Image 1 (cartoon, rainbow, N blue to C red):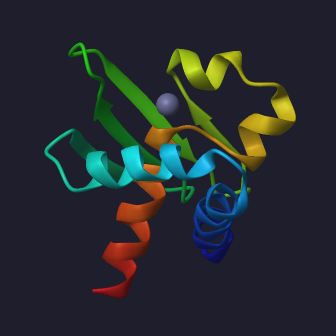
Image 2: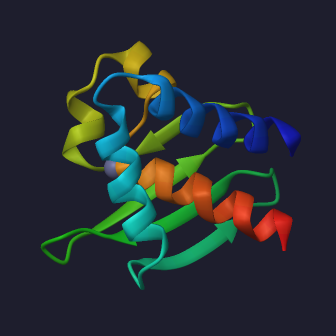
Length: 106
Ligand SMILES: [Zn+2]
């Protein structure tokens, strides 16, 4: 379980410290504070799923896996290099991470 939270924190940290990454994090905060996070679900194996609505109404499955890897169905994520996907993520993964950490703190 804590691997997922560590990963969430690391994704946010990476996007804070990277040049140009702040924009991604700002957009993630907007998503996190909106009704675009449609559903949150944790599997028996501790994988965390968020369903997030995109800007044109599409739905993305956004995964924070218990082994510390991440996945999102959006095109931005798909276009990243494999190592960037795991290190930087996308705004949906950041929004998922922000929500997860907020829930944990409350
Ligand atoms: Zn995404």
